[in-house]
Length: 192
Image (cartoon, rainbow, N blue to C red):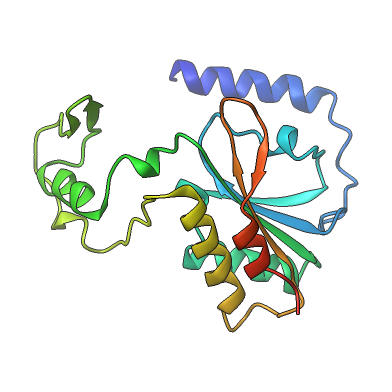
């Protein structure tokens, strides 16, 4: 058993020993959802003042409005009653450090973990690689405000998203912990 597995199971024992949330309803009590990045420095419960049962939090690389993220938002609304959504990207995001070509090149050489230094990304494993990463648009980020606006617009224009759902756009600052509004994104995400 790995050290990490042992630590997780031990933490769960402590958490479950005093667990008192078993009666929470399935729909989120505050009726909103957050789409944000998987970055370990982000704690949506803390930066948005959430407790268990308050909101849906959908996380992926970059907090991007991928097909699967939109699928989750639509389920959140249609089946579980959320009425407001937030798209929250963040400063110093790893999705700003590569593009589709870089990822494709790395994957074509090896499926092992790559490394990055001042000169860029380098493959550190031995092959074989696979398919040049062509099966996925990695949804990398060049400009945070632009990507938030793009994702809010993609969500709002999706045929399964009702026009009356407001979608707010923010960037979380990893240095200060503050949410910084992207006004153009929030404007694009207005309910109609």
